[in-house]
Length: 412
Image (cartoon, rainbow, N blue to C red):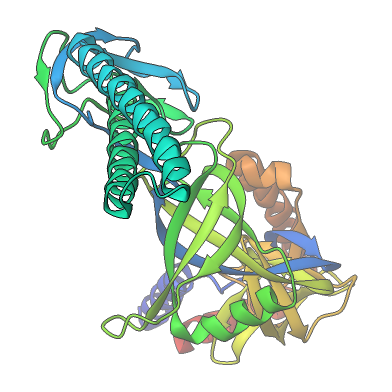
């Protein structure tokens, strides 16, 4: 009975022994996806948050008072500089101009008569036929008429300007917004809302901020005459909206936030950027040529620090500490630890350890986990059958192996 009881206890422990982690002596190999380390260019980028800002925004206001007689635009239209926007009743200003021209003609005639009299008095004064006082009075009268004529000419110019203001034209190229005043309203220069707002969209700029620690690097590159490419992404940061270049930065640092404001310009020919839109900015500061790069998916962090699993020629992996540089998207620069041609694990590294056996699968298998799992199970089954055949040849050794696995499992 004691022997039977001991046998039951031993058999129960064998069934309850946990399987050994990947890389165990009799465990099946782990399925992984490798990547070959290569050479390439990697960019040094700075990320920031920005706001789209128009280079020119004009609120169209009337310079004179009058009734709005015509609106010559549709909301959302594209206008060019000099295009007609609206017309104001011009009849009062036409009458004022005609009146100013009449006064000018009258005063010019008076001036001409005074100048003729002055010439006559000058000839008579040379013969002492008239007093010098009368000559001096005529000289002053001519000067007075000359001043009156100049004032009349200024009045004519003012009336012409006011008449021109009756035809409101666009001062810039841009897009017309929503109409603020309807046809027939009486408009004045004091209207704060104006008639409409015209916004320049091509080109357009983005204002964004960077920490003051990055200012010296940016200023150095601009001083060297480098063109720094700038890309604008949407709120999620996944979709690129437009590409442009950095123009300049502000003349002072914001003391409250410790940041510097910069401006980038975009052609915006596809109209993907609109004023006051929030965007993510990626500024390409520099490019490291012919650098050793790898996928960020292969980076592991643990007790050795930053490391990767290196694929060996005997279908095993080993831990390789690495030193990383800049990161550009899903690629990272490797400063030391790997060389071009090395193969590392980028998928399936969660259960690996030093010396673990592996089975390489393709990226297609990585996209189809069910097929990959079936392949791994078949590989494990083949390994188990091989172990069973060896155990059948020598029952004592097989039992000893099972006992050793049990002890290892309990120790874990």
